[in-house]
Image (cartoon, rainbow, N blue to C red; front, side):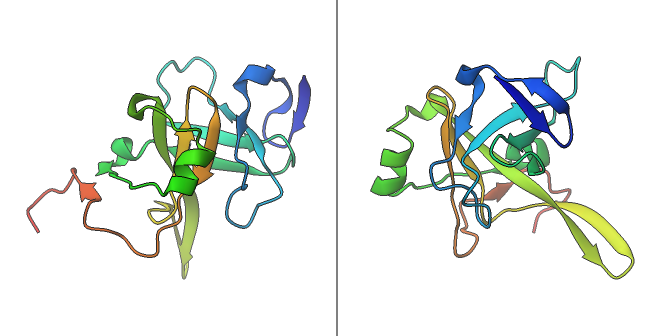
Length: 147
């Protein structure tokens, strides 16, 4: 199928490449179908664009938390496991959504630590795991000195 996007123009999307988020993403619950896109010629991209197929102007930059030195150990509820269709651990990818944070005249790109995406890569279904607070089981592996 051909899909019109804001960032990439018209792209051909194979139906088996579509990732479904049955509950949508926080604030964007109406957009349920996405594709992953990345820069041409990069076999191992450091980040991806999660492009909505339902809303052409909606796209998120996402990244594997390991690229930023984070390691998640997430406990999924029964409902979340059912939504992901009971994946095997090796079929699960955890990704962080990046957002622009502005403070005064300074801007930076920051990962959303409290709401990672959890994706069953085999069945291509995902959810956004919203956590009330950061848990101690999120470890930072790229610290320069001990805390």
